[in-house]
Amino acid sequence: MNWLFHKIFLCLALLIMLFNFGCATKGTSLEEFVTVTGTAAYRQRIAMPPDAVLSVQLEDVTLADAPSPVLAEFSERFGDRQVPIPFTLQVPNTAVQAGHRYNLRATINIGGALRFTSTRRYPVLTGGGLNQVEMLLDAVAANPSERSPDALPSPIRLPATFSGTLPCADCPGVLQTLTLRGDGLYRLRRVYQDKPNGLFSEAGGWKIADNVLHLNNGTETSLFAIIADDILRPLDSAGQPIKAPANLDLRRASDVDPLNDSVKWRGEFIYMADAATFTDCASGLRWPVAMTGDYLTAERNYSKASLVPGSPLWIAFTGRLERLPGMEGPVIEQMVIEKFGTSHFKKACGSLASKAELAVAELKNTFWKLLTVNDHHIPVAASPTRQIHMTLTSEGSRMAGFSGCNRFTGAFKHTGNKLHFSQMAGTMMACLAREMELESEVLKALGATTHYRIEGEHLLLLTRDKVVARFESVYLR
Figure 1 (cartoon, rainbow, N blue to C red):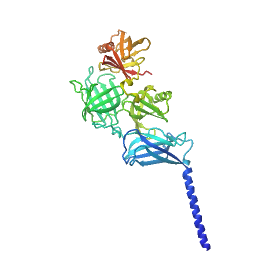
Figure 2 (cartoon, one colour; figure 1 turned 180 degrees about the horizontal axis):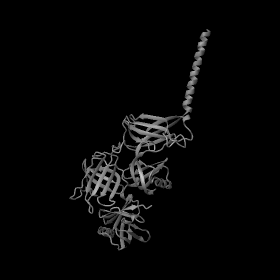
Figure 3 (cartoon, rainbow, N blue to C red; figure 1 turned 120 degrees about the vertical axis):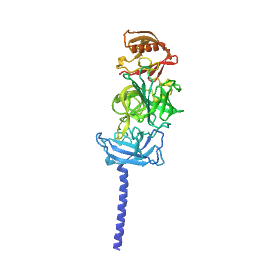
Figure 4 (cartoon, rainbow, N blue to C red; figure 1 turned 45 degrees about the horizontal axis):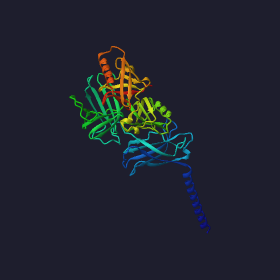
């Protein structure tokens, strides 16, 4: 009997111990872990395959010059879901230190290839960071020549570079190189042969309609007929064939030319949580901004605008695209601001719905640099003082400038879109014959001007409805 009682007593004691252990374990999961939840998404309207994998890591980023320890990690296949994909991370309370900084990093991989990654900081746990986060990821290609996962539909194999030499009125020829990327970005480079400083490059967005390629740099559109997968042919502004005896075709090159030229960009700059992004108005594409070059000027302008955090600021600058290490590890394409131009807190890409709304620069009190006169491109001068230009001042409706050989002054009158120049006078310097001829053509165009139009940063002088000269605004710092 005593033996039976002793056995029952041991069983009861064991049950009590198991019960207490279970309660203690349950208490530990509630009290000794902190939970971080959120979602991961991207802006592109594309679907991920079922085998796409979302990975989210919570890292200790306190030490900037050392590897970031991972405190918790989430990894899950998309399956039949699409973004936003929810995630949950649990971190032991004992691993969280008040003086440390913690950040979330996320990636989306397909078959082991990185397709999307976070390029912003998402602080959590300490320093006012939230423990519920909505992460926005950016697209990234494995290498520059790889077709982007959000590539636009096209009858042309992309990416591709087309090149050809077009006729030139005062030089041996104009070498044109056009590169198209699958994500909708293009770069057009023109080199005026045997011309000092005869290199001109632009970038923007492209689209194809009715077998015609449209290039939009934010201020004007260029058109090309798609003759074949490997041949493009320029069209005039009305989309009609250009009548010329010369061969105007651009043919596919064997190699894709990288898009790393320094060009002018216009778009929306956002600075938030120690990181910045830039969205190009012409293409709608967005990149993280590298914290190098003239980046700090852009950040200061953003701060001076006193915007709500996360709101965009319209900016214009000269810069280039470059693949650099991201803030959180992988090498990604970033925007490098080489020389900041200007900012407008009341402008936005979304408001540029028509050419009438593209006007940004002002007619008066702007340094206007001549780009073309009667469709002839003006080479870049060796120094800014020798660049053909003009400035129209508000006070007294006076104008002054440089016409290629001599300085000139005059008066102007404008009402609505009408513009007339008068009382022209200039110095009497003697120059080379070609400079004198160009100056005569410039002054003749000014004298024939009846109307004007501003498109973004470009001033167009017109004789009724014909463009006789095109200027570009220059921001002097």
